[in-house]
Length: 290
Image (cartoon, rainbow, N blue to C red; front, side, top):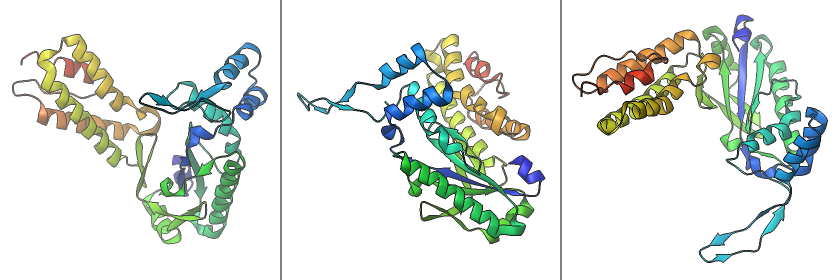
């Protein structure tokens, strides 16, 4: 997206939502693709086959339950293997003229467009969405246009042109209005990639957990407070910063977190420097003067 901006282009990003995604993975097709496209054979393939095959399900209510029924589609939600198996199953969908980044059932269409020739760019985007939708239909997957979103990313000059040229994007015969922001894998993307909304959301979340830890800090040992700070706060500060957020936004995030935490810290405690490397230690030591 930054490269497209350097080339005086804007990027159209369409976030696709799939209905009941993990419930529609065909076991036999998945195993064939694992073997033919990823080269998994012998014992590892047998392990995966034993994981998928001979699965049953039933409904239980109180002391009553239905007979167990076998099924040959679907992978368990919440398991470690399921996102990987789903990604394998949907890997051919990425073979499109658009860039199709995928992470488990989170899929985006990404196309850099020059708005000097908008009709051609729109026709390519329409063809991409049609190709991906057709592939999903052929493989038992259904796009959910009501939860899909579209965003145009670029510089201020490119966005002025884009806003007048594109007001909606067609996905699965539904016109999606172009949004001001969308959330992708927990990161809020805006039109300028300024990440202000994302910084605000992360800061609010970290402040909430910092206050929660403060309320019970007198009941916690230093090691336990350190563990809670790492798991509840430091993970949010570090999430995706290396790949998706520029250094300036990371500094903005750290400064905003420090400001909110300083406003909420107990009286008599030392000022906080909320850099990601030191956040957990700061919170763990917060009550030494309490």
